[in-house]
Length: 435
Image (cartoon, rainbow, N blue to C red; front, side, top):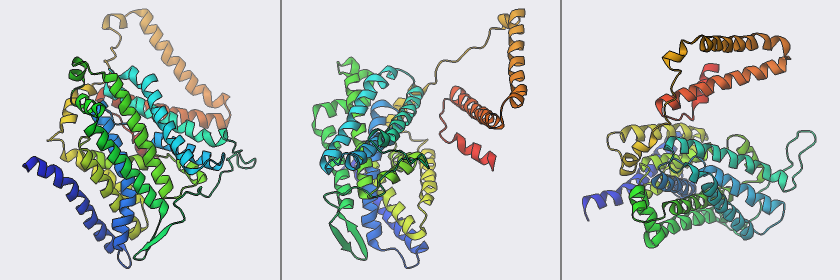
């Protein structure tokens, strides 16, 4: 075995072992009576299997398209909503609802590629990344309307839909096992099995099928693959179909394993559903340098083990978000000197859009241009000065809110247009300024 293969084989195992050791250390340091090994090994594996599927989906999409797919969690959200409304509203069986939800996510990913993403195939990767953000928000907005579309009427007093607060039954829920002092049920085992089957299916697809081999080849060099006669656009569709399937499996496994009801899912969706979930897939993907699928799988299990240990020891799972942020930033800083092959090949494709030129110096001195500019600023100043006097207090507050959003938007335009970067944490700075 060569040194490279030894590292490739040992690094994922070492990462999981390090997470287990860290989990025991955290649980014993903050827990009152220490942490049972069943929490670290079994509960961590249950949560980690879902994270692994998310991480594989992100790495798979990045290797093929050179884009971080921020719509990954939204495909999962749609599948979970559809699964729950089919079970609760139409009383479908478990397997029928599960299959229909998975098929819906795959079909939506197919349509998204054919109708939206293909139009940006040659666009800068920065633009396509923004498209995935918009696509994710659109899918999530549609998912939130499903309960009402399936007949759940809103409460006349609160305006909120009357949704079931109990998760639908599954064929596995009645089975319960006790391992040590911890109880596990069939839903948790089913969640792990669904996740593992999807991971094995991706590995078999990439390793033993002609389409999978072509996808790997196109991921190495898209232009070269096109010159060799490979249907690159068709492969892109295959990639997004796989990504939609992985997002659905991850979300459905998480929902089934945690026995989430439709009411709870709606609350999570209203409160920025998918951000924390995406972070738990993004952290292992970044550790894997958006390139190694085995490292992404190991990183997903490592994150799950660590999260369960922190939740057991401190009772505050939100602490994990901060730690994952540190992991992401640390991994990016550590990897700057040794970029992976995928990131190095993609560097040039992250050019921002063409520079917007200002008014030429010769035209700027024309009297008509000077008068027009002056009138524009006078009109804006007049609107700002008169607005509070002619509008109601509610409308004035709403106008102030729009102005704040406008300032945030300008800051994003400056950052994206001049720096070629996307900030998903811009409102974090807004929150700091409001303190």
